[in-house]
Image (cartoon, rainbow, N blue to C red; front, side, top):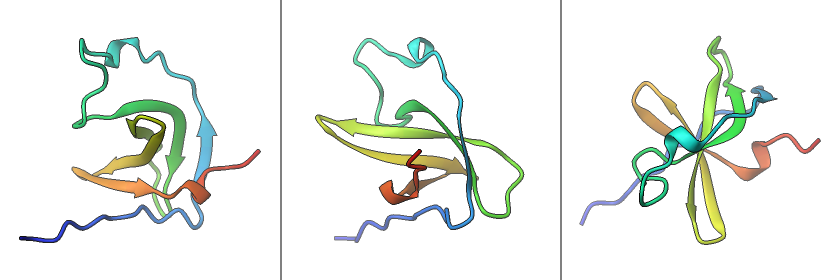
Length: 85
């Protein structure tokens, strides 16, 4: 059996901004899909990038995992990386 690997986004010097989004177009009959996740109101510009990326959430019950898409990969964002203010 192969091991699953998790890649994390480098958020050491990332810039954050909150930009609300209407989530209704992302809803399906069964809720959010595992493939796409739920869009959040947060956007991040990762270290050394000029592109603002939407932060998505995989949510199961009361536990969620945040991630961004970069070049076809899903990079997870650790909880401590989010701004606290």
